[in-house]
Amino acid sequence: MKKVLPFILLGAAGLLLCVGVGALALNFFGMRGPSIDTSKWLTPQQQVETQKIVPGVALAILAGTSDSASVDDSLAAGDFEGAFAQIAYGSEFSDANRVGTLLLLGNRYAAAKQTAKAAWLYEYAVFLAKVSPLPSDLNRAQTLLEAAQGLEALNMESNARAALDQAFLIAQHSFAMPRDTRADVLEQVARAYEKFGAPKLAQDARRLARDTITLPDENAINISRRPFRIQPTEPPANPEIVAKLKERIAAARELVDALNLNPPKTAADMPEELVRALGDKLYEEDALRLDYYTSQYDQAADASEQLGVLRDKLNWLAIKNRIARKGYGMSLVPEWEDQAQDITQEMNDTYADYFAITQQQAEGLDKADEANRSAEDILRGALVAGRWGLYPQYDEADLRAQLDGVSQALRDEQVASLRLDSFTRGNQIVYLLVPDELYGMGERALPR
Image (cartoon, rainbow, N blue to C red; front, side, top):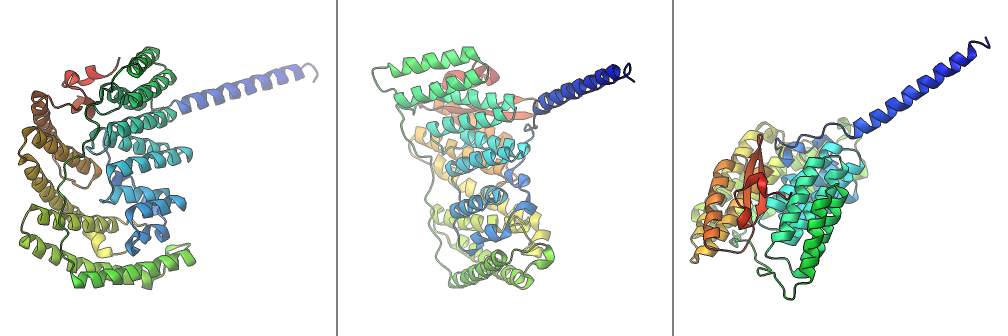
């Protein structure tokens, strides 16, 4: 036995060594495993997991809570999916508000080890930072830097580097960043490149930061410009809709109170009578609204009045679409669930009308340069609406072609701003904000 014991111990030691090496390998390759594929675009609505939404929190928006307050309430309650649903389905958020919430939720999902969801939320923020006409260049750069950091922590090096490269291009070429702000952003870019293992680009960014801070004069020439928009005229209040809205809010509050007082553990525990009462009020309100929108649009005297009706209708259809897809975490109007595609079609057609009117108004401005910049704003807004799922049947190729024509006109007019360019990588359309001298260069425009 004494002769055998050393061999047994040696074998056990060998086994432990193999287990240890295997664990290290699993940890290394598990952490460095295949990245989430974000090359095929999925709308935010497609990513919402409705069964994870807390109805007692999410339904508060049907009881009169504002969009932003609804997101805050969901975050405070730890209902990340409810907050995401409000960002995904809501039509009232500005893109600046969206990106902040997306980054916050991305961090929360990453901490919860929901890697795929976190990656997509960072990618949505990156997309808005590049394509939306609303954020300032500083907001764009800061969003991209934070998203790059989040993506890098998820081991999505390629996506992270793409976001960082775009932040560098904006910091380097923006016409709207004051000197000291530009130098600070460039220093942040340099530190990020160092962390990402790109020392040459880190040196380039740091050198530009030093050169910028020593400039004797301010070099920002286009500090602020609000994207083009027509102020819609609010449609006149309809007494029947106002009364029905009050009834719906009361029914929603009663249901929310019941759900929070006695949270149902199973579907059988749902207060069915209250659920049915809210569903009935929503169904009745819908009938009144659709008739009202048709009559008001036909009577509209100008574009502003038409847009007022269409905007109100879009907001209602966004709620209706969310209900049809159980986006409040439960079934409210079963009839709409069967009509989900029809509701999507109506939402698409309504946005198409809204887009056509605003585009016509933008192109009709007296000054050519302002008309082109305004048309660019409208086209970029349509791209965002399309990718977000609010304009499902948009023609992205056609919008890009129109943007290319507008960008060429702006270049000819020497309008000082970054241009939204695009190129194809595999089957993916990549958007990029670049100065005139890099426009049309595709991937060659990226920092090297």
